[in-house]
Length: 154
Length: 154
DNA sequence: ATAACTTACTTGTAAAGTACAAGTGATTTT
DNA sequence: AAAATCACTTGTACTTTACAAGTAAGTTAT
Image 1 (cartoon, each protein chain N blue to C red):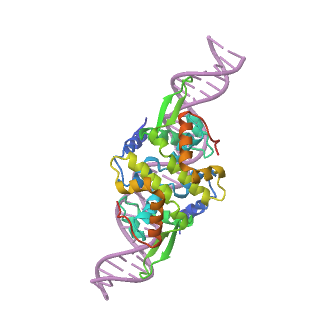
Image 2 (tube, chains in turn brown, cyan, red, blue; image 1 turned 120 degrees about the horizontal axis):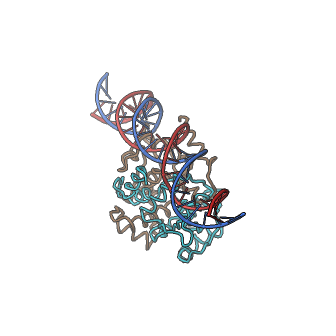
Image 3 (cartoon, rainbow over the protein chains, first blue to last red; image 1 turned 90 degrees about the vertical axis):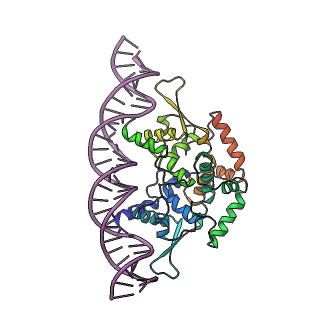
């Protein structure tokens, strides 16, 4: 890890926190332009590797991805493990702390689906999130633990 | 408005959207380091003026605040009106689109309260959000419409 | 009435962060 | 044994941010 990454790493532990406000805590943890997309990929689309994240349609730069993954791992939202068979690869997964962001993600999805006329959010999914929230959360959590992929990348 | 602001303004209308993913839509709307704090100030703390936002404890820079307010207004999350009596002032308020972010904010607060050992989130508030979500949402929306302040800045 | 103050910004500049292209070294595949 | 893949790192130009200072319109105090 280089100096810049270490700087971010250290900030990660919130030596430089702007306030103790819960909204601010969330912002300083994953409130940049990319982190939530990585979390999305892990939460809904079964992506697990560096290359998987790189290939998402939003096209994150490789250096940015590297620092965000350090950051998210540092904050305990993401875990990195050696791939079972391929020694070149690492496998990323959400920790419990990361999985617990699911309700917030669902609310964001509901909001975007309401206000973005060209949203890619599947109607049935949004309907489920609105009317069967708790059940949908359980279902997704179960799938995550079993490493089943419920949805295709948008 | 200067060239830079116009550039952001144009991006605001999502000519340059990275994808139609709902998470991405939210990120491109308010996914920077400051917007959610402005929305928080409007939602919970009864702040309404430029100076109010400037004086929040996170210390946003004045030029950043100006561009974020343009952006948020452009996206229809915030409305700007001349102050009733003081012609120097403007009064900012949340639109319905902005108010509809409340459920997402509540989930973020619940998450941060769980994982930040030094969170400033009031326990009773978090408890209410968990057990009486819908009622709390109604209560806050009513207060917003009546311009009552329910909470003190953290 | 006028000077001092407040308000909502704008401007300038240095520092930090981002995007893009091109490596690199350790595997794995062909 | 060569070519490809994987998870990064490095270099550089560009963009964004942070901080300090200034400005114009409107309000308050004397």
